[in-house]
Image 1 (tube, rainbow, N blue to C red):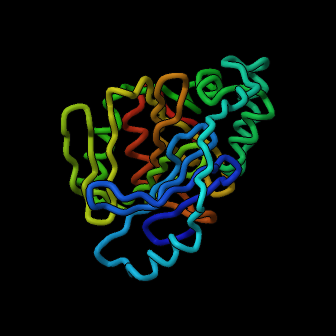
Image 2 (tube, rainbow, N blue to C red; image 1 turned 60 degrees about the vertical axis):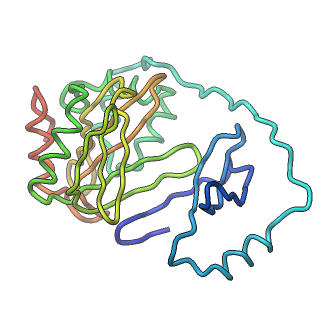
Length: 248
Protein backbone atom coordinates (compact mmCIF):
# COMPACT_ATOMS: atom_id res chain seq x y z
CA UNK A 1 0.00 0.00 0.00
CA UNK A 2 1.68 3.19 -1.22
CA UNK A 3 0.91 6.69 0.02
CA UNK A 4 2.76 10.02 0.17
CA UNK A 5 3.40 9.75 3.93
CA UNK A 6 2.95 6.09 4.85
CA UNK A 7 3.75 2.91 2.93
CA UNK A 8 2.87 -0.59 4.13
CA UNK A 9 4.51 -3.82 3.00
CA UNK A 10 2.55 -6.86 4.15
CA UNK A 11 3.79 -10.45 4.33
CA UNK A 12 0.66 -12.53 4.85
CA UNK A 13 2.33 -15.92 5.27
CA UNK A 14 2.59 -15.39 9.04
CA UNK A 15 -0.85 -13.77 9.59
CA UNK A 16 -3.20 -16.14 11.43
CA UNK A 17 -5.80 -14.61 13.81
CA UNK A 18 -8.04 -11.54 13.24
CA UNK A 19 -10.24 -9.88 15.87
CA UNK A 20 -12.66 -6.98 16.07
CA UNK A 21 -11.90 -5.44 19.47
CA UNK A 22 -13.73 -2.99 21.73
CA UNK A 23 -11.53 -1.76 24.58
CA UNK A 24 -12.26 1.24 26.82
CA UNK A 25 -14.57 2.68 24.19
CA UNK A 26 -12.01 2.32 21.37
CA UNK A 27 -12.83 -0.01 18.49
CA UNK A 28 -10.25 -1.69 16.32
CA UNK A 29 -9.49 -4.61 14.06
CA UNK A 30 -6.35 -6.42 15.20
CA UNK A 31 -4.20 -8.96 13.40
CA UNK A 32 -1.95 -11.58 15.04
CA UNK A 33 0.65 -13.97 13.69
CA UNK A 34 1.02 -17.72 14.12
CA UNK A 35 2.72 -17.14 17.48
CA UNK A 36 -0.24 -15.09 18.75
CA UNK A 37 1.79 -11.86 18.64
CA UNK A 38 0.31 -8.62 17.28
CA UNK A 39 1.18 -7.85 13.66
CA UNK A 40 -1.01 -4.82 12.90
CA UNK A 41 -3.95 -2.84 14.32
CA UNK A 42 -6.46 -0.57 12.58
CA UNK A 43 -8.46 1.81 14.83
CA UNK A 44 -11.79 3.45 14.18
CA UNK A 45 -11.66 7.26 14.43
CA UNK A 46 -14.18 10.11 14.47
CA UNK A 47 -13.89 10.23 10.67
CA UNK A 48 -14.70 6.54 10.18
CA UNK A 49 -17.95 5.59 8.45
CA UNK A 50 -19.49 3.67 11.37
CA UNK A 51 -22.09 1.90 9.23
CA UNK A 52 -19.42 0.64 6.84
CA UNK A 53 -17.23 -0.43 9.78
CA UNK A 54 -20.03 -2.44 11.41
CA UNK A 55 -20.98 -4.02 8.09
CA UNK A 56 -17.36 -5.02 7.49
CA UNK A 57 -17.05 -6.65 10.92
CA UNK A 58 -20.38 -8.46 10.52
CA UNK A 59 -19.36 -9.73 7.08
CA UNK A 60 -16.27 -11.48 8.40
CA UNK A 61 -17.43 -12.42 11.92
CA UNK A 62 -17.26 -16.14 12.77
CA UNK A 63 -19.80 -17.89 14.97
CA UNK A 64 -17.10 -20.01 16.59
CA UNK A 65 -13.74 -18.29 17.14
CA UNK A 66 -10.66 -20.28 16.17
CA UNK A 67 -8.72 -21.38 19.27
CA UNK A 68 -5.35 -19.66 19.50
CA UNK A 69 -2.60 -22.27 19.33
CA UNK A 70 0.74 -20.50 19.34
CA UNK A 71 3.23 -22.03 16.92
CA UNK A 72 6.99 -21.76 17.19
CA UNK A 73 8.77 -20.38 14.15
CA UNK A 74 11.63 -22.28 12.58
CA UNK A 75 15.00 -20.87 13.51
CA UNK A 76 16.72 -19.24 10.51
CA UNK A 77 19.63 -21.12 8.98
CA UNK A 78 22.20 -18.42 9.60
CA UNK A 79 25.43 -17.85 11.50
CA UNK A 80 26.70 -14.79 13.33
CA UNK A 81 30.03 -15.00 11.50
CA UNK A 82 30.23 -15.49 7.70
CA UNK A 83 32.30 -18.38 6.38
CA UNK A 84 34.12 -16.04 3.98
CA UNK A 85 34.12 -12.41 5.12
CA UNK A 86 36.16 -11.25 2.14
CA UNK A 87 33.71 -12.77 -0.34
CA UNK A 88 30.79 -11.27 1.59
CA UNK A 89 32.42 -7.84 1.46
CA UNK A 90 33.06 -8.15 -2.28
CA UNK A 91 29.44 -9.16 -2.87
CA UNK A 92 28.23 -6.24 -0.72
CA UNK A 93 30.29 -3.77 -2.73
CA UNK A 94 28.73 -5.17 -5.90
CA UNK A 95 25.11 -4.54 -4.83
CA UNK A 96 23.01 -2.41 -7.16
CA UNK A 97 19.76 -2.26 -5.13
CA UNK A 98 19.17 -1.99 -1.37
CA UNK A 99 16.50 -4.70 -1.64
CA UNK A 100 19.20 -7.19 -2.67
CA UNK A 101 20.74 -6.99 0.80
CA UNK A 102 18.34 -9.59 2.25
CA UNK A 103 19.13 -11.97 -0.59
CA UNK A 104 22.84 -11.54 0.16
CA UNK A 105 22.26 -12.53 3.79
CA UNK A 106 20.41 -15.67 2.71
CA UNK A 107 23.07 -16.55 0.16
CA UNK A 108 25.85 -16.32 2.74
CA UNK A 109 23.68 -17.79 5.53
CA UNK A 110 24.70 -15.01 7.90
CA UNK A 111 22.67 -12.90 10.31
CA UNK A 112 22.18 -9.23 9.62
CA UNK A 113 24.41 -8.20 12.54
CA UNK A 114 26.97 -10.81 11.53
CA UNK A 115 27.20 -9.20 8.10
CA UNK A 116 27.55 -5.71 9.58
CA UNK A 117 30.37 -6.78 11.87
CA UNK A 118 32.25 -8.49 9.02
CA UNK A 119 31.80 -5.90 6.25
CA UNK A 120 34.37 -3.31 7.34
CA UNK A 121 34.09 0.19 8.81
CA UNK A 122 33.52 1.84 5.44
CA UNK A 123 30.39 -0.28 4.84
CA UNK A 124 28.99 -0.76 8.35
CA UNK A 125 30.13 1.23 11.35
CA UNK A 126 28.89 0.85 14.91
CA UNK A 127 28.00 4.14 16.62
CA UNK A 128 26.76 5.11 20.06
CA UNK A 129 23.14 4.42 20.94
CA UNK A 130 22.57 8.14 21.51
CA UNK A 131 23.16 8.68 17.77
CA UNK A 132 19.47 8.28 16.92
CA UNK A 133 18.53 11.28 19.10
CA UNK A 134 21.28 13.39 17.57
CA UNK A 135 20.19 12.41 14.07
CA UNK A 136 16.49 13.15 14.68
CA UNK A 137 17.27 16.46 16.36
CA UNK A 138 19.46 17.64 13.46
CA UNK A 139 16.92 16.42 10.90
CA UNK A 140 14.16 18.31 12.71
CA UNK A 141 16.27 21.48 12.98
CA UNK A 142 16.88 21.50 9.21
CA UNK A 143 13.48 20.09 8.09
CA UNK A 144 15.39 17.26 6.40
CA UNK A 145 12.93 14.68 5.01
CA UNK A 146 13.68 11.17 6.21
CA UNK A 147 12.31 7.67 5.85
CA UNK A 148 11.55 5.58 8.96
CA UNK A 149 11.09 1.79 8.61
CA UNK A 150 9.49 -0.13 11.50
CA UNK A 151 8.36 -3.71 11.06
CA UNK A 152 7.86 -7.26 12.21
CA UNK A 153 7.57 -10.60 10.41
CA UNK A 154 4.15 -9.69 9.04
CA UNK A 155 4.38 -6.04 8.06
CA UNK A 156 6.73 -3.10 7.52
CA UNK A 157 5.50 0.47 7.89
CA UNK A 158 7.47 3.25 6.22
CA UNK A 159 7.02 6.95 7.01
CA UNK A 160 8.46 9.53 4.64
CA UNK A 161 8.75 13.22 5.48
CA UNK A 162 10.26 15.72 7.88
CA UNK A 163 9.87 15.38 11.66
CA UNK A 164 9.48 18.28 14.07
CA UNK A 165 8.06 17.54 17.55
CA UNK A 166 10.57 15.41 19.48
CA UNK A 167 9.79 14.55 23.11
CA UNK A 168 11.69 12.47 25.67
CA UNK A 169 9.42 10.70 28.21
CA UNK A 170 11.39 8.43 30.53
CA UNK A 171 12.96 5.66 28.42
CA UNK A 172 10.84 6.64 25.41
CA UNK A 173 12.05 8.99 22.69
CA UNK A 174 9.02 10.12 20.71
CA UNK A 175 8.12 11.81 17.43
CA UNK A 176 4.71 13.40 18.04
CA UNK A 177 3.82 15.03 14.75
CA UNK A 178 0.29 15.44 13.42
CA UNK A 179 0.71 12.83 10.68
CA UNK A 180 3.41 10.61 12.22
CA UNK A 181 4.10 9.16 15.67
CA UNK A 182 7.12 7.10 16.66
CA UNK A 183 7.70 5.72 20.17
CA UNK A 184 11.23 4.37 20.59
CA UNK A 185 12.25 2.68 23.84
CA UNK A 186 15.93 3.60 23.85
CA UNK A 187 16.61 1.26 26.78
CA UNK A 188 15.82 -1.64 24.44
CA UNK A 189 18.51 -0.57 21.94
CA UNK A 190 21.57 -2.82 22.26
CA UNK A 191 23.57 -1.53 19.29
CA UNK A 192 23.35 1.14 16.57
CA UNK A 193 24.96 1.05 13.13
CA UNK A 194 25.43 3.36 10.18
CA UNK A 195 25.18 1.15 7.09
CA UNK A 196 26.44 2.03 3.62
CA UNK A 197 25.21 0.21 0.48
CA UNK A 198 26.03 0.81 -3.20
CA UNK A 199 23.13 1.04 -5.66
CA UNK A 200 22.67 1.92 -9.31
CA UNK A 201 21.67 5.41 -8.06
CA UNK A 202 24.76 5.88 -5.88
CA UNK A 203 25.53 5.06 -2.26
CA UNK A 204 22.64 4.78 0.19
CA UNK A 205 23.23 5.20 3.93
CA UNK A 206 21.03 4.25 6.85
CA UNK A 207 20.99 4.34 10.64
CA UNK A 208 19.89 0.98 12.05
CA UNK A 209 19.02 0.12 15.66
CA UNK A 210 19.13 -3.42 17.04
CA UNK A 211 17.74 -5.01 20.20
CA UNK A 212 18.38 -8.25 21.98
CA UNK A 213 19.05 -11.36 19.90
CA UNK A 214 19.93 -9.15 16.93
CA UNK A 215 16.34 -7.97 16.40
CA UNK A 216 16.12 -5.03 13.99
CA UNK A 217 14.10 -2.31 15.76
CA UNK A 218 14.07 0.56 13.29
CA UNK A 219 15.89 1.88 10.20
CA UNK A 220 16.25 5.50 9.07
CA UNK A 221 17.12 6.66 5.55
CA UNK A 222 17.05 9.99 3.79
CA UNK A 223 13.98 10.49 1.61
CA UNK A 224 14.49 8.79 -1.76
CA UNK A 225 12.82 6.70 -4.44
CA UNK A 226 14.26 4.20 -6.93
CA UNK A 227 16.00 6.13 -9.68
CA UNK A 228 16.63 9.05 -7.33
CA UNK A 229 20.05 9.62 -5.67
CA UNK A 230 20.34 9.90 -1.91
CA UNK A 231 19.89 13.39 -0.47
CA UNK A 232 23.37 14.95 -0.03
CA UNK A 233 22.26 16.55 3.25
CA UNK A 234 21.33 13.11 4.66
CA UNK A 235 24.63 11.62 3.53
CA UNK A 236 26.53 14.51 5.14
CA UNK A 237 24.56 14.11 8.38
CA UNK A 238 25.31 10.41 8.75
CA UNK A 239 28.95 10.83 7.71
CA UNK A 240 29.31 13.47 10.44
CA UNK A 241 28.18 10.88 12.99
CA UNK A 242 30.85 8.36 11.94
CA UNK A 243 34.33 8.10 13.43
CA UNK A 244 35.71 6.63 10.18
CA UNK A 245 34.99 7.66 6.54
CA UNK A 246 32.38 5.71 4.61
CA UNK A 247 33.05 4.21 1.19
CA UNK A 248 32.04 6.53 -1.62
